Length: 371
Length: 123
Image 1 (cartoon, each protein chain N blue to C red):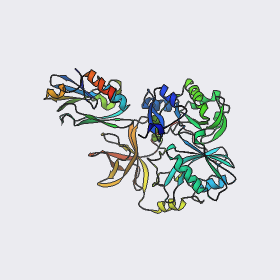
Image 2: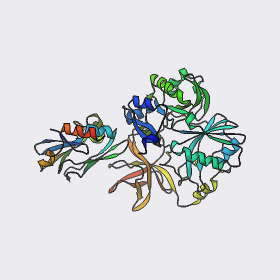
Image 3: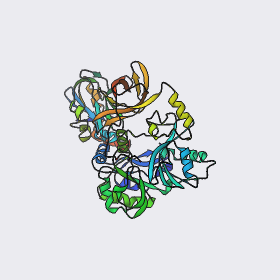
Image 4: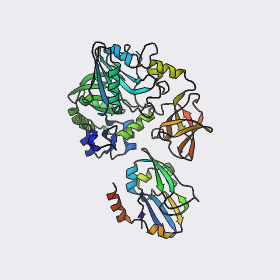
């Protein structure tokens, strides 16, 4: 662990400690991996009712200025001009080799103001990256991470719990859209987004407003949930985790994120992405179900086809929602649904697994309406 | 009387039958157990060797054998309900029963108060 004095605390740190959260170092932030209820119960709360996550460690970067939209169009592979104001897209920054610098959410706020939400572990790298790409564009880049606390309320009951003290009609906010409004009397960004596969909202608010909002939501029935539950939930829904499924080497196409790319426009890293697509044989991210007893394949476990080493596990766990041991991993693109592979749980212990459809579990999350 | 190891297993002895599990402290550290890879009956395991492994939602953990012996019985209830280890690690959550030959291995382990003191100083 790094020096304790360097670790950052969110505005809710003391509250996590008070609630009995087990605190760990996550990307340089002191955050609860779980509360006394435990990861499985927290997971169940989110799937069946409503969970509450402190995601204040996430990075927020404003892009502002006359050429904001033109610049964003160049910065990420997703088509930004086709988006409406108030709409959000999931995307990534691609490097020259077609790898992924980071994944992100882009909030299209105004013609001259766009918010990028990036991973805590990558904030400094991303800000430097964005600034380097911005040369020659009439834009300014501002790392506003310290100005925001972020709370995610996730689960089928989320809307019902928040509505009574929201200034806006939440049912009118579509999936992957946002508004500026008040929750608990505090103005902020309210977005219908999340990382769990369930319906829900993320609030971007002033740091000093985080504690009263958190306590209000808990008092109305939202149950605190930690990083452990968050990882399990996102894994079942097959959402990418930077450093596991995606990194500077894997391309968005390999990771199954081709849908975010508009190949009809120019964007930074496009040549690399296209080149990686032409490389054959290539690897693809696939989901697998373990069909033999023996254990749980974890990040880094080797995948074999016959005697041949064929790939590697990115995330594996027992999915409580489907009661099966499943994993995500990179394998040759020739592997199809139903095919069998061997996976090494630990040296000398190998079990059979078969390729299955992803996501492993589909929760209450709304689908995005086609424009 | 229950005895404990520095690697957080417990063992209780009835004649030459040693019942083995992980301590309550260990299950707290491990978190929700979701899979128990139980040892095979008939397998001989030496003191300090890996008896089996447990998987929690967070990670895998190895269970080290506190005493040399031959696996006589395993707790098959853990196959379908590994969470018993979280609910009652030191009773219903036992993992295996071994037939042992060397009682001195058992005698040399920590008793409950020594184990509690050990846990308090090794946080």
